[in-house]
Image 1 (cartoon, one colour):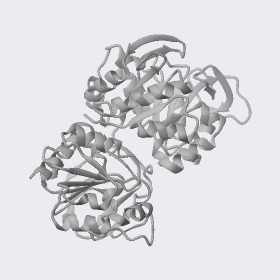
Image 2 (tube, each protein chain N blue to C red):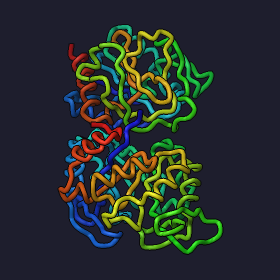
Image 3 (cartoon, rainbow over the protein chains, first blue to last red):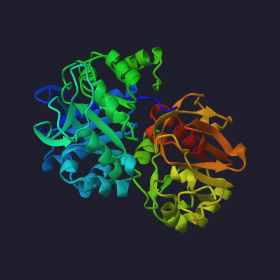
Image 4 (cartoon, chains in turn green, purple):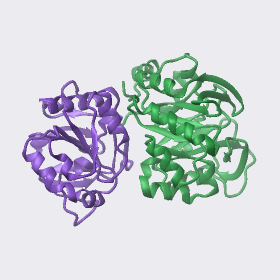
Amino acid sequence: MLARRIIPCLDCDLGVPGGRVVKGIEFKQIRYAGIPWELAGKYYQEGADEIVFLDITASHERRETMTGVIRETSRSVFVPLAVGGGISSVEQAREVFNAGADKITVNTSALKRPELISEIADLYGNQAVVLAIDAKRRYALEEGRNVVQTEQGPCWFECSFYGGRQFTGIDAISWARKAVSLGAGEILLTSMDRDGTYDGFDIPLTDAVATRVNVPVIASGGCASPDHMLEVFKKTEASAALAASIFHFGEYSIDSVKAYLKERGVNVRI
Amino acid sequence: MTIVIVDYGMGNLFSIYNALNYVGASPRIIRDPEDLKGADGIVVPGVGAFGSCMTQLSKFESSLLRSFQDGVPMLGICVGMQVLFEESEESPGAPGLGWISGKVVHLPEGVMIPQMGWNDLSIKRTVPMLDGISDGDMFYFVHSYYGLPKDKSVIAATTDYGTEVTAAVSKDNLFATQFHPEKSGAKGLRILENFVRSARC
């Protein structure tokens, strides 16, 4: 049986030589966490099932810094590496794959030009294309939206892009389904309402997407404790849980989180 | 000792190169069948469709067979395992290497396709390549098809994904895995170490 995966996420600021890992709160405030490949190596040793690198600066000139980070990491880290942030063409994807990445995550560029998903999937396979969605709850219901029940009332979920700075008007659930039909092999689903809040994953959002697509869903946003991971695995079909701060700032190690989950009946790789 | 990785134009060899390097092998990536001569160990990776892999691999076919018959340790990974079979449902009409009788079939209905993630092994045979690996150890899989050998005794390990899926086969000097040892953490590196050790003998 496939294990539920625990994935640390490294938000990389590549505006400094070699890059650095930072963590934003509600997509805004920034805190310094460490050097990308050093953190990746530490998480690998602790039992991370996969590592996600997101270039939060996402500018063209800095892609070389990211490929440098991946090249360095892949010398000593032997689990899948996913890389995202500002990749908008097959050529750019190729640079990142050639540096040692196993998967590419796309968000803004795919919203602007959905064919990008098929273009990368045709060359590298669906499993190599992860669609990242930043979703925000909207309680003002509109016709044609996928409505989800929450404790705060019914809502739909709107996709944002440009790192949460702009909204698209696009329904996140519809977009997830469309992206899968175009060749996305996995959905990295971030709740903008929960990200950085430490309130736990958005369960209704995760459940709604995971039951409506036939590819793995990675739950993201809001994780502050092993209990939050337990909750998302018990209450939804999420294949993986992603977290940043709880690992970066020494609150929990990945192996301790996995031991906690295993004791409570979640199938994880120890 | 020379370990070679066969580069036949199907996918990224960066990870397997790095992993072999990490376990002390200093591998060489080769693109010419001539370079198989003198190799102490041969790695056949593979991604993409069975048919395109076989087309690209064809120029290596006779040299690889000679090395196999000469007893050179060989390691097939993912589609590099599937091509050892006679044929695949993925690419009807495209013949495989046929070193193992049987065919490559699609994963069953009712499970997510591809299988992508960590799954546990059930070990069927004690083989040197699985030295240090125990029942239940997890490895990283990414695939939609798997090999079904006629002679079940070549199966070294299986994994459960909607059905019993062949995870590793072993035949003489040949060992092959459906999972990716180069992406499977310390346990995967252990298998690569076992392979490097067999090449040293």
